[in-house]
Amino acid sequence: MDSAEKNSAFEKRLKRQVIGKPHRFLAVVPLGFEKTFVREMDFLRRENVENQGTNSLDIKIAGDGKVEFTAKLVDAWKVVAYSRIANRILMHIADFKAENFRELEKKAAEIPWELFLTTNHQPLTTIHVTCKHSRLYHSDAVAERLQKVIEGGSLPLAAAPAGSSATPSAGAPRNAPKSEEIVLPQNLYVTLIDDRCTLWLDLAGEELYKRGHERFVNDAPLKETIAAAILQEAFNAAILTTNHQPLITLIDPMSGSGTFSLEAAYMAHGLIPGKCRDFALKHQPAFKPATWDFLIRRETRDERREKGNNILKIITSDISERAVEIIQHNVECCPLADIAPSANAPTISPQLRDFFSYTAKEIADLCGESAPVIVLNPPYGKRLDFDAPKLYTQIGKKLAELARELAPLGKQLTVANLAPKDDSRPGSKYTCTANLLHECPALDPQQNSDAKNIVTSHGGLSLNAIIARI
Image (cartoon, one colour):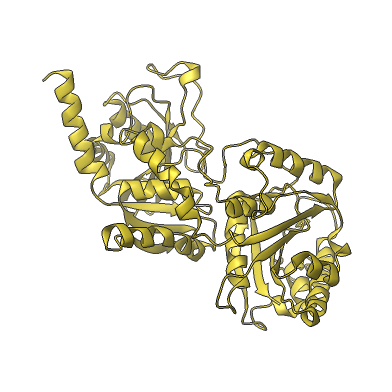
């Protein structure tokens, strides 16, 4: 069989086994925002109904921070490109029972790896293994066996212990490309639970919170994916009691590195989060550049459906001069800098200002006919040495005051506030959330049906994302 025939046969296998049939996918999302991601997936549901006359997406919450869905590969590419919330999108490769290494190697050797991993110009693939309640309990040994199996097909791999980063190990493989040709590493995630081995291929490469452009950060920066999820929840709360989508003025008065403001501006301008960066899927055998370009060019129609593009203004400020300089730098280095100013889309002009200096009258004047939404990510006091519970007491008082004074002005305030989970140990005085809710009871879901508390985590800290109309 000549080269052309081999290529044709390979393309047919790709279309039949990878591109043309549905697969299971696993979205890894910020803890607590699984339902937010499911709502974000609605644009795919609607598009499938419009184009195919059926909803072929089967979406379900699989566990803490995990959402499974069944779709074709191109639909998964859309999620990678468009999702503001997902951190990773994993494609199911295989699952099988493996009680010993012989079974593991035999079953792994039956997988057509050439359909998922490229042999030429392929960087090291990192294998992440998690073992629970299985006879094969040594994650490094499992990764080593899988490495040997895939290397048998001339695919260079680097084993990584469970929980390690997705950075390729040192040392170039025998068929490594030149430095200027290096592409994103391919990550393989393996779970062995109750002697059942499941393999997932990462479509993103680097985590999706990385938007693909330079960004300076302040102390304890918030991930873009968490910020986007909180914004979507806040915008959803702001329109709950109306029959239409009102215009929104977003106030980000403790902006830090400007993550909330930047994500809101991307939504308002209809910028696809994955447009400016590379993905592992682009270096996998099934990738079709023309198909990808077509998906990206459809941004106008798809983004028009997204909550957040009704943002009228974005008010960005911080008490720190360094933070204001960082935000200005980030605005100048992000895709917003390439967009011509428009009367219909907000800009970001960070100001040096204390949150506590804002008045209800000023907020009402800034908003005009739009609805005010305040987002707050105050310091937590665990990495920075200061009296955090006192700060959250002051924030609670200020929010209660603003809500009370805005009501006669015909404004109802929507608040999204991140607060660290309280220390429940006897005698502990670390009570940030309790102090916040005590001073502003309208933020407490037990006292306000328009409030919700989403328990999440960031940087190893357990947080409460409190979102409410007050």
